[in-house]
Amino acid sequence: MYNFNHHRPGSVDAAAAALSSADDGKILAGGMTLLPTLKQRLANPSDLVDLGGIADLKGIREDGGSLIVGAMTTHAAVADDATVKAKIPALAALAEGIGDAQVRNCGTIGGSVANNDPAADYPAALVGLDATVHTNKRQIAADDFFTGMFETALDEGEIITAVAFPIPEKAGYAKFANPASRYAIVGVMVAKGPAGTRVAVTGAGPSVFRLGDAESALSGGISADAVSGVSVAADGLNSDLHASSEYRANLVSVMLRRAAAAAAG
Amino acid sequence: MPTVSMTVNGRAVTGDVEGRTLLVQFLREQLALTGTHIGCDTSQCGACVVHVDGQSVKSCTLLALQADGSEVTTIEGLAASNGDLHPMQEAFREHHGLQCGFCTPGMVMSAVDLLNKNPNPDEGEIREWLEGNICRCTGYHNIVKAIQSAAENMRG
Ligand SMILES: Cc1cc2nc3c(=O)[nH]c(=O)nc-3n(C[C@H](O)[C@H](O)[C@H](O)COP(=O)(O)OP(=O)(O)OC[C@H]3O[C@@H](n4cnc5c(N)ncnc54)[C@H](O)[C@@H]3O)c2cc1C
Ligand code: FES
Ligand code: FES
Image (cartoon, rainbow over all chains, first blue to last red; front, side, top):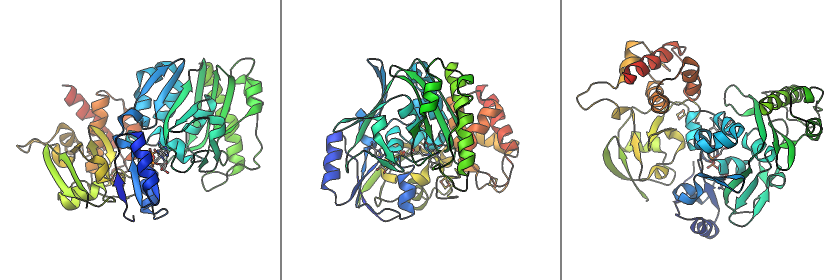
């Protein structure tokens, strides 16, 4: 790892100022993705702006029919939170299934969302639950946020401050996890929320996507049977040493049925 | 050079570090607390697990400066000052929960965090919790037994 200057600002404004005055500044959240990247010398930032000292960015609150999760809230905190368990149990279960206990104790929702790994779990939650990403400059709908593999709508130096999840009537998440890392080979979120029924798929393609056929099939009611005929083409899906695109296409159908069954309760 | 201060095993410590200094390097190289091991250096194996403010973390993937002002506990901080082993250490010894011992400090620290959160885990919960701790020797069975036995003893 090349050396860098470490900053630990106490507010979002101070963090934004530190980022804009740095030559090549980068945000540090839980470090679970960024520090391994730096160790491999795949990046060489001049400055790391550590959000760990900003109390405002941590914690979960309910506000006007939504759960607002601060960007620096760890996966473990989301998984253990009584309000999340009561209002969106599928979100708590998704967080509980990320990586391992120590990754969950450090990794944050803001870091996961900003990174937009094609195999990450949270993108499916944000798109499936029709969440909104709050930054220090604006609010971005999940549908517009994830723009491609490891790419998002964030501008240079823009800081995610929170993610707002409308509380759904029903939601369920199912993933086929990589047995080593627990990243999603395929993960599917099914939710019936204020904006209707949504189905989001992670792990299968270059970035999270919605499955329109499944959404129509579930519009009359959520059940595994309702989606038993839904399938996706392997074309354009990811293919790597973990799974071929055909295998992933099949997993989408299987995880879709499991997620629908979980959402139906 | 930045200065870092933290409490390690109940003792206040301060040191000069680089931005890139990892917590595990600070513990091993500056504080000579070599009980915390480095197995993979890529956040996979869990040999480096310590507690920061009561939470188990991989100290190979945390900057020393991220732990500034924190309470850190390493494997050296578990035994009583008279040398009596912590019930988890005792259980690993009793149940042959180690062979070469390389993974053991991380296993023990991870297991202690589990019992802090869930004093009565079943076998499945223990195995799931150990997802981030890799052992090349034991096959895990005796580690799981040790944690079950420690849980019983610690519940009293
Ligand atoms: C062994 C292992 C297993 C894992 N398994 C899974 C898994 O099963 N599922 C899964 O989804 N993930 C998994 N992960 C990834 C994990 O969830 C990470 O926590 C996450 O991807 C990054 O979050 P972080 O807080 O550590 O961010 P960091 O590593 O600190 O940052 C990641 C990126 O996001 C940027 N960033 C961070 N915070 C913000 C912010 N508030 N605003 C703007 N940009 C920001 C950083 O600049 C950086 O580019 C795993 C990781 C490891 C090491
Ligand atoms: S050395 Fe830290 S996880 Fe392997
Ligand atoms: S006892 Fe040798 S690695 Fe676990």
